[in-house]
Length: 395
Image (cartoon, rainbow, N blue to C red; front, top):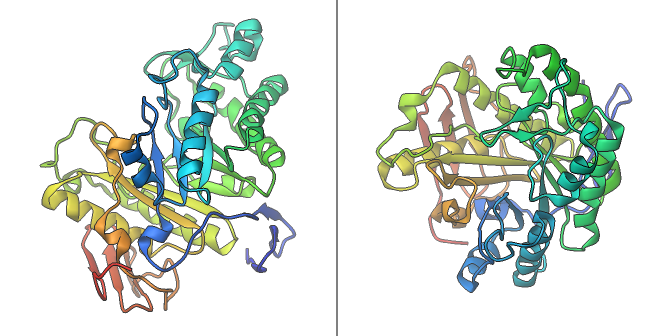
């Protein structure tokens, strides 16, 4: 399938007539430096301090996680906590674009625009073949039955509640294609049979379509994809996070002496290569991606891990490709696990070679050059990395 991108187009059409949503009003983004492509995904129990905002205002794209403002606004619904945080970010940087977090399956009690509706009408919740309510996650929360059109409408209305506040530029949908990953793994354990998971796949996709329609092409509907499955939600939304862990892994409670290389497998290398292709292809279609990498935060292993994920991102990146590197230990989705890294300020320049370019005859090795003189090489199987920055003088 071949694609032609027309500058300024809102919807891109392929040679077979299919249409894909693009980003009409993009966040600020440029090839000037890696920092001009950086985003922040944070969760902070308290309202942001002046120091917090000095960091966050550097990012052109910001979104929050589930614990945002839970301590500062204990009696508010989570939707209103997010709105308060978004307004803080926008006051610090009016040009920043902010996305509203919603989980596409898990029914968290604090998200009252969703939870209260399911309390009033339990038929909106997912039940197994025996009629018992299904639960998911470490807290055993109930699950939205997204096969139910009424449930999907309530979900879309919750998203629009945030959007109509004027504080958000779009929505971030967690577990967007979780059912597909569940099937790929042969089920999710317990009542999560392949049959039950399969029954949700099309409905999860329908929910994304309905959100994209409601938010509109002037906003961003971003789906967080499940690692290890084919990312295809770009067919119905204009943004994707390729996985929780771009070319990296979770390692909860690990310290900075644990080497990511000792945990790396061929499967991880393939997932990394798949993400590189997704990023390059979505950029060519005029769509937005987020690459959320993680690893050790300090010391030589932290430097090596960060360089590897940066290299993997740079060989993939195109217009509207965004990157961040977070702490893999305990705060990978929190403000304390967010940094503005030195590499973010190094000059980069436009690429002088294509994205997703493998070295001839190699399955895993990539290279790319940039107009600043910076060159990048990465082997996603061995994690061997070479980034020669033309200069480390900040832009």
